[in-house]
Length: 199
Image 1 (cartoon, rainbow, N blue to C red):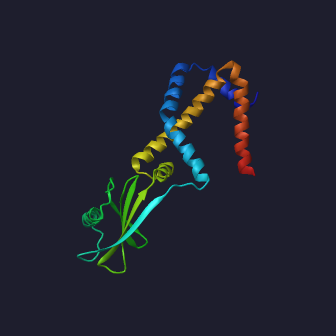
Image 2: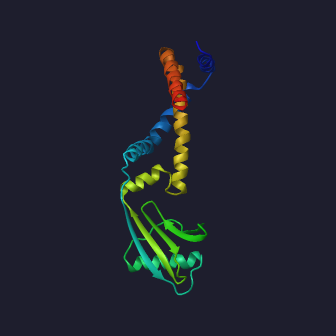
Image 3: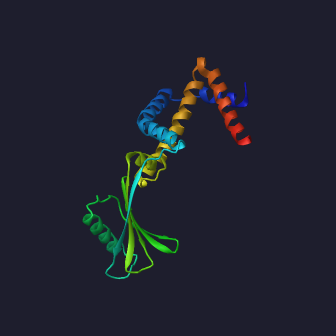
């Protein structure tokens, strides 16, 4: 038996709450399965360059005073412009970011986004309105580019998937009838990963 196999066998022989591990394994797998399937499907579509559609509209707006990175002023400007054009308002919190030596106003959610840029004329700004298709929204979730809540949920899923895999190995190696094939499969998986980096 290999060194890894002996170490795993020693761990298995320790008094571990096997039923508790099974419950953790099952609960995490059931809870995160929908999001995991969403990630797998969107990743497969992305590999075929299927990313959805974004309806992009650009407007030039006049200002009553020279452009300034004023969050309240730009938020009011965005709301007025969207209301006049009968466009749906996004949710979420607007923000101003410094970008390429200038400022960018951004306000959006998973479905819609509003961006305001200054132009060469200090009394005019450019407003870009994006309406994302359902598939594009899924792709944003896949990239964890859908807000802090989705990003936190995605990171939690990563930790949980690692836990599911580790507990699955523990349960397999801890079952006498599965121990040998489980160790062989584990070793083969490690060998494949090493081969990828070597080649």
